[in-house]
Image (cartoon, rainbow, N blue to C red):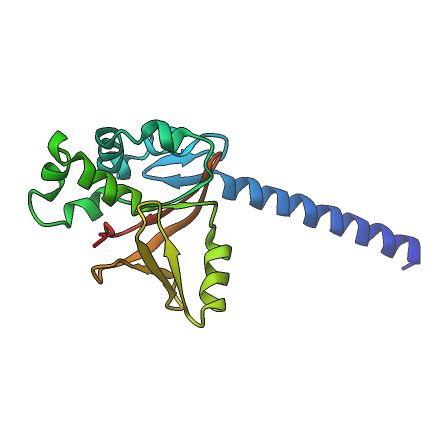
Length: 188
């Protein structure tokens, strides 16, 4: 085989590799959550309303008056509990939080799931590594979450000792990133 043929084959292989990487990136961009594609061109709210797994979260965000904030430029990182996570709370908790007289408490719980900035899995993983296996993450509510890597993924421990697992990471939005979690995180 001549050097021209080898160069041609290497160039073809390189082009194929680059195109494949682009296809993988494009596939990763349309992450499915709750049966709906999460489009990176949409904001946090416009994507969340399409997820059948996050109807309770969306209702809570509306009741707390946080829609416009989470449609804003951000960037925000949201640890988004599923309907199943809300259902696991003690009976009556969600109904109580959704009452107008409990808006301040609901807002505190919801903003405890929000971090200023765009913190994807790689950034959180680096924070954990730099912190010798754990990282303290300051939330918009003023509280802290403790992130750890258990070798199988990332967990978040709230101020009450509850632990949530990130079940879907890196759901990119136009104004941040969402990480789906399996528990509702509770501040002090």
